[in-house]
View (cartoon, rainbow, N blue to C red):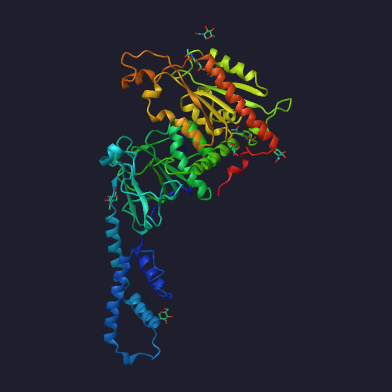
Length: 507
Ligand SMILES: *[C@@H]1O[C@H](CO)[C@@H](O)[C@H](O)[C@H]1NC(C)=O
Ligand SMILES: *[C@@H]1O[C@H](CO)[C@@H](O)[C@H](O)[C@H]1NC(C)=O
Ligand SMILES: *[C@@H]1O[C@H](CO)[C@@H](O)[C@H](O)[C@H]1NC(C)=O
Ligand SMILES: *[C@@H]1O[C@H](CO)[C@@H](O)[C@H](O)[C@H]1NC(C)=O
Ligand SMILES: *[C@@H]1O[C@H](CO)[C@@H](O)[C@H](O)[C@H]1NC(C)=O
Ligand SMILES: *[C@@H]1O[C@H](CO)[C@@H](O)[C@H](O)[C@H]1NC(C)=O
Ligand SMILES: *[C@@H]1O[C@H](CO)[C@@H](O)[C@H](O)[C@H]1NC(C)=O
Ligand SMILES: *[C@@H]1O[C@H](CO)[C@@H](O)[C@H](O)[C@H]1NC(C)=O
């Protein structure tokens, strides 16, 4: 869980606003040979105001001292400017300060907060701009992650500010952009990098949680392993205070330290918080090429194995007493919904097929009572994952690349469960695994309505899974033979291709 934040990185500092300092800085900068081109700290119209101010003063000055009184004919433009500036600095620094202060106060008052959840997009909550920060555009290069970064050229140097503590209705939370010199009144500035995550589902289910994290991992990898000082988690614009344990540990492994989830403790309800540097993700892996996704999963796999002291050698390195490559076949069981109705019978089938193949080793594990690291270690021993449809299958990305997955569904899912039933086909593809197909139970719970009636899904979704001995045997045999052939081929090449240690680094 979250602990109190360590001092420096995420210490909160209310920003001191000193317009006097800005004004003086302005004069000093103007003395450089190309005064107006290097100037970019304050908004252009403050500059314009001061330029007009100088110009007026210049005219006045020229009237008071005619050209004949000028010191020498070599009156350069620079000299002229210096005089103007010197004069201005001495005689009117107070006026300029007042001007700047009034202007920056106006900017500070004009920071406009919009609802984090835009109800106009309720029907298209996860499409296009999404209903989260709907006025903003993402930065998106072909094949890369879609993200927003503040400050950036796209934000014209503005920071992201949030008033976002509501846990029940995202339309009560709001966001705004502000220049660092003119943050809204009473704003708290949070230092260093902040990750702001939008998740349409939740941070507890390991599949939905992981989907929200992948783009941050890709960004982290692309930006020299830059690590966030804090996370701000939203679901439908509502603040979330934690991630599930599995996800927390995966993030701890990936970023070399426990994630700190910001809850805005001690900050008044309507007080804004602004972030020195923020990265916002609201499209999960959307837009990322397969290679980019694989790199992100490679990094998490490698980091998780290091964190859990699991082997980095890769499956290619394990051989049995006879020097035959070991094929790890793991049955990852569920209890309750979508478990096998007769587990013993199913295990017996796979045991029998495994025993027929030289080097095959069967492990039966239960997802409900394995810690994160036990799951990481189990996956590092697995070439073939045999498991019913369910969140535990998310662990598949922790196997070596090119490993195999066999999935099982209860009755009724094909017609009624929608595209969501294919998520483990997707993650297999994204993380470089081979999805070897799915078995769909033709028999199961009885439904009082016609079988394609949507109401039946309530009954089918938690159904148990039976078995077909003939089908399972043939299927297991085919997958085992395929994996065996691949292993022998790899062994003959004597390569350490599947070693993962190199993918732990960034850049
Ligand atoms: C402006 O002030 C600087 C330093 O105060 C001085 O060196 C320079 O001669 C002044 N220029 C003019 C034109 O008065
Ligand atoms: C800043 O906060 C104080 C105390 O909560 C409040 O009295 C004041 O009006 C706030 N200032 C602005 C500009 O909102
Ligand atoms: C990994 O090994 C190190 C040193 O041997 C130990 O301190 C650490 O607790 C181990 N981590 C896990 C997760 O087992
Ligand atoms: C499970 O299957 C085995 C083998 O087919 C059978 O002997 C056993 O009775 C079954 N158990 C249940 C609870 O149906
Ligand atoms: C894990 O859970 C399974 C199923 O509930 C149970 O059979 C097994 O004994 C448990 N193992 C441990 C180590 O608690
Ligand atoms: C079991 O699978 C086999 C092979 O796919 C098929 O021919 C057979 O009809 C199935 N049996 C049942 C009871 O569905
Ligand atoms: C493969 O890795 C092992 C152990 O890390 C090493 O001893 C061996 O030389 C490597 N083989 C090749 C071909 O790189
Ligand atoms: C996975 O398999 C493909 C095609 O067989 C091969 O080109 C690739 O090198 C393999 N990847 C790893 C990491 O072993």
